[in-house]
Image (tube, rainbow, N blue to C red):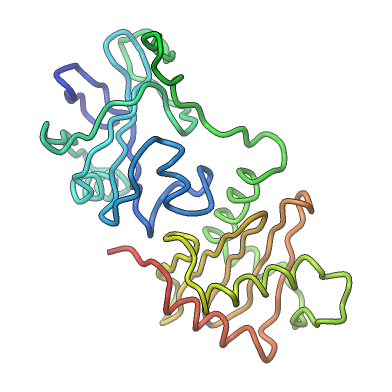
Length: 260
């Protein structure tokens, strides 16, 4: 578990941290970087933020926002390797401490009361709470796309043979056609930062994550794509390479936000 640190002169038992940048942010919170920032009451600065989630001595949930993105990135990398890391953002880098957690955590700090939201002063916003992802909707759709990106090989194996690219006359794939049309529109008119993200994949390929109003697409630049739609609960639509997809994915990769 991350070590105990201090923030805003109050002891904070750090539980985890996440990055909030145009290229890396918790997808469950929104379709793009500005949308996620707005939900947290933050300005969508290009440099981004680090979010440190923890508990105070009374067990209250707090999210500390820091501009020291590199520090948080180093901490996350160390924890992923099973190493300890002293995550203690400098006072000058702290933007603020927000009551509550924007993400659901299954862990708690030892030796303090169980996690609870602190009582906000009168007139202050309510504490942050995780999006409801129990039922199908934007949050669960985005989480589904996250899962496909993380487990690409397993999902790819489920696709038997060649998958045909959605044809204009194929009414069964009207939703997929709409997604591909809107994705092509991003090439001509770039969307808000974070709507298109690119990350490393096997070989020289890239994993693309593309989101829009009511839809998410996950693709490999050297392979196929998967589309999820808000209005088709639980359905995952594979989209084959065909004559159009390779060029579309290459163009999207050119404009995508990439981790530094």
